[in-house]
Image (cartoon, rainbow, N blue to C red; front, side, top):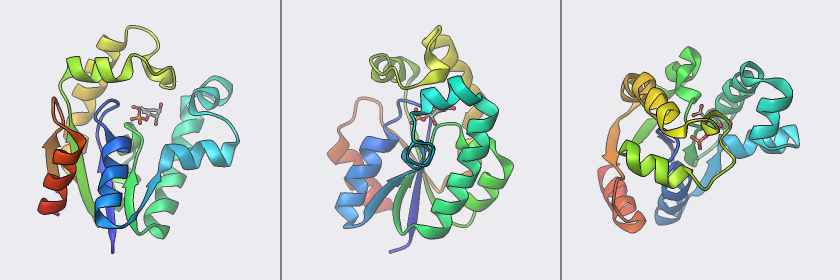
Length: 164
Ligand code: S3P
């Protein structure tokens, strides 16, 4: 099988749905945030605190480049990966699934998670800003767009599989 990349804002379900989709396709799942944390030997929030966002973005560009070159199966990217021009160029050549979610549901899904450094202060306003800024970028790279709000993982997975 070839590569299916999952993009979308924090709280859109990239990891959960990406994993389920990989299982449904009999493929393996990979996540660039996990690759970055493994290679750095520390969590994403610790990378932001110790080295700053710019350094994280450089690690992210390299992690995406490597994963797109190496991986066959389903690959989830961090919510901000599409901000990099070179990443969007790479994504033009592969199948990209864009997961969307309503702001209120994204706030609910992310509020119990302390692992998102950009959402520590006023998460609702931050999420709204990120979603507004990035929507055109997700749309630029996406082949398939699917709203995950108030829908079950199994149903979403089956729909994505049918549309691939
Ligand atoms: C980020 C999203 C995070 C992670 C990092 C930055 C962003 O991934 O890559 O904290 O800029 O939106 P998720 O989209 O999985 O939360």
